[in-house]
Image 1 (cartoon, rainbow, N blue to C red):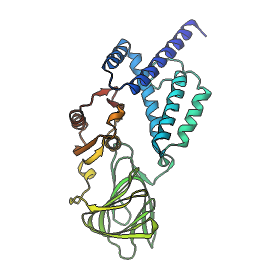
Image 2: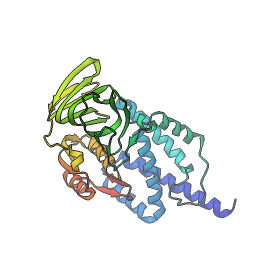
Image 3: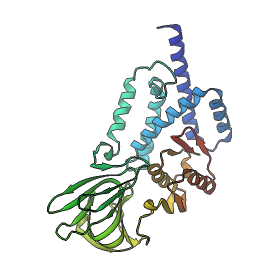
Image 4: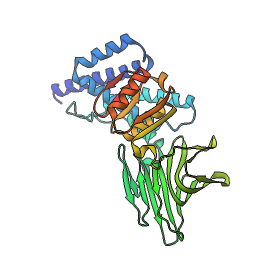
Length: 335
């Protein structure tokens, strides 16, 4: 190996080590203005610094998302700390995706262990193969074989099970709006986890996310079969939120025929900021990452556009007095 290669690898290791140190410092001291100024100075010193820090943040984001299903805050903190420690010692050996340096370095055994941990706790839908699916910031409208119209929101997936005797759509994850074609011989059903919705000449929206399953009826009638053999009949305008731990919450939904997401809106009713960012990350082709944990549960009320990123960012920035750090077209940090 040439002297130049040794020098390049040494520089890579040095910058990646610095990037991980900055990541830890900023997580521990998000309000320290002097630290932020020093960090900005470090970024400005060399373009490689920003690229390396971005790689560290992106890897942490993947690990953070993988651990979000753990049930208790204590366990979550422990895993995150363990992940950060492993990341600090192993990121030096990860080849940069942006090819800032020419020669990749072999993955260490520690990093392979970290990858295995990440795979084991990834959201279940990562491994599913839906009949129809959308990615982040994508929406899709399909006319099904019976004439019903399916509208899929971003990052959503369904399986279609139609036969001569029945029509069943399985919502695997995400959100969908159905305009159901009438067929008295074949009931139209939507299954989401342990909730079954049977349409009766209906247009309705159903959402299957981490916070539970939510159904809003905009036209006709809808019969819901919930866990523990609970049955409900919904009428136009009614909304039901079902969660294993909180049970059934029934309320009067919004009156428009089309759901908010089909009209390009996100309605916030004192929704915590961390949940707002989760919704926005499904709608925009950019990742919004909160690095100030003190803001995670701050409630927001109002309406945000789902088709105007700059306006959305301006509203968040002014309403919450947060600082936006734009690393690239794909990543924006809220501090």
